[in-house]
Amino acid sequence: MMSPADPRSLEPIADWPVDVAAAAVRRAGGATDTFGDPTRVFELASITKLMTAMAVLVAHEEGTLDLDEPATDAGASVADLLAHAAGIAPDETVQFCAPRTRRVYSTAGYEIVADRLAGAAAMSFSDYLGEAVLEPLAMSATELRGSPGAGARSTVDDLLRLAEAWRTSALIDSSTRRRATAAHLPDLDGVLPGYGRRRPNPWGLGPEVRGHKSPHWTAPTNSAATFGHFGQAGTMMWIDPVADIVLVALTDRPFGPWAVDAWPRLAATVLAGPR
Image (cartoon, rainbow, N blue to C red; front, side, top):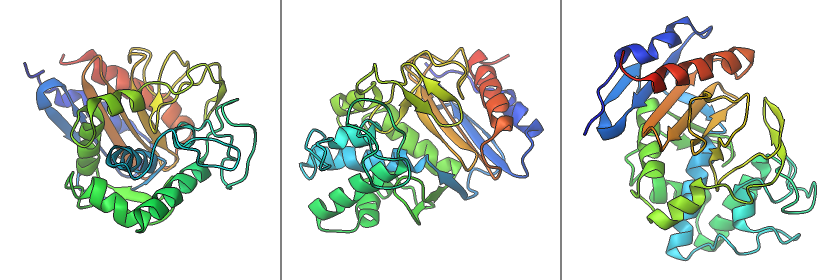
């Protein structure tokens, strides 16, 4: 049964201190509401990781790259890199600590994974991403212009398509998707960017897993199974499989205190449902 649309659920965005914003909420059955221009292109920053991770999951199923194969000199696996458990420094491809001992959020780790995939596939990572993810999902407005961990540009419309691939088995088998959206090494502590240390800090193979983190950029009423990502460009996307709701919001203002306050309020309004 399709959950009813609720155009008012996105009204709080009108009061955000940003120049430009676009957003969409999709409820069970496909009812979708939007705010702003869903075709406008924004810098994504770290939401890029959800595209890169999906490409790696496709490569895993194709036999090009195995999630459990060693991928660093220290013995971290591909899965460890995707879940920020490899001990790689945040912004440079050096070993910061031993693998699987703490959650070190690392964009550089995604560059290691992408380079490894490119070598195994004998093609550039951007070409593989296009063939494995962007083209099958008809994400025609999306492009990778920099780091596989933070360098993509996209639109709300395209990210709704990506969200569907994470929510359903559009590109990968359900068993792979379940593994990727569950916490990898769930008891690891680590810093959640913008929020400080979390004990534990659960993370999947690409998406952050909400768990019981507080405060958080989703709402207290989001389920613990909620997964997604936010970017320093002022962008966020989450999927709550219990509520069966997807929320995407893109802005032109970098993440900061305004988002810490505004994003959970928006999530709570969306989850409250039609009024």
